[in-house]
Image (cartoon, rainbow over all chains, first blue to last red; front, top):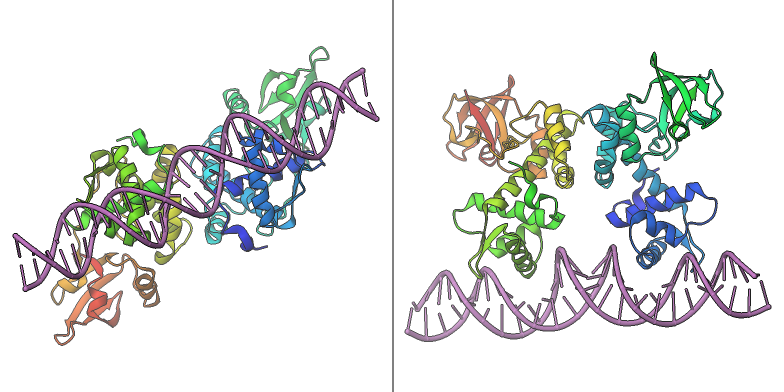
Length: 226
Length: 226
DNA sequence: AATGAAATTTAGCCTAGTCTAAAAATTTGT
DNA sequence: ACAAATTTTTAGACTAGGCTAAATTTCATT
């Protein structure tokens, strides 16, 4: 896949809309609502309508008034290109520049808009073609294909399950900072010792250390079951 | 030095103007002319006037109608911050991503606008605090100070001089590609064997290889004399 | 010192992307 | 099924950054 058609004539703002529509499109099966886009992008619905029209002109989205919006195949390719860049930069920041989980997003939001095929391919090589970013999300390859990890929420596995922490569902700064503070990191080996019926909290063993975590935490942590 | 005051409220365009004014300001001793800025930035003089007024409002430049423009101390600090970022990214591209001389500039032009102190300081560390970029230009440190290299144009040294190639005066793609094609690179050891009186061309020995170069080439190559 | 040339600024217009307020379409509740 | 609530769109305005054309200031040359 070469993201050539529009890739280099797209503005930052257009790219951000495309990315948001992609992410919202994954969640529900229905077309994405104007209001939903406006909320995520912290803008007004009227501005969203304007932009959608422009994206529609460029054949990046399918749009019928009042009916919501979805990405065309060109739009999807474009979105995957941006996501590839975002996640590769996140890996770079963590692996090469010692950023922590919660620091990468803001900078990657800027870096993802840099336009250079050679740059991103070289970065990919430098990082040895990683398949997942620091939050455990998959990185699309040059052709836009990627595999979802076979992972489960920690809150959904039975007692005695053993697995490796591979990602988070909630990637808010608050949550990531919390994990950091409690010494929970990607790659940690976790065993579920006991599940408290009363509140759903878990006793776990993590890297030979015992701790208790609430159900809220557990339902935002992904593990790869052995 | 912390580039904080305006650094994070500056637009890409404002940063580019500041950078251009800085570079033009180095050349002549006089204030920078509107036309000169317009030519470099490939825009119209009237647009330059508009922007200069805005920069003046922000106390980044000194400006009196019809009298040209110069950077304030805040403007200079800002320019040095941008140049530091540009040159560090250039080193990164060459050292870590195997870009060649002539490929770095365009991408660095984009990367220099990424806003994150932590990013640039970490990059500096990753690259082991380089003092010069791939074209031999000095990289300002965190405080904005830098040393000009004690270098000479190859065209201005006498026969039998030996030195190391440390930079170029003309950093146009054309010239850099030419050097690449002829196997002339940073760090190469050069000895001047003979200077042709007629046209000023030079016979040189470069890394044990003999070649002849025109005066035009020689007057765009810097060497560090031993 | 005056005048023509060159440089610079002003005035007014344009586009991308945003906003508010009001109108129109859709969905929901009874 | 129809009125009310919600969502979405339109209309009109604003800002940053650019443009053209015209006016103004400075410079260079007699």
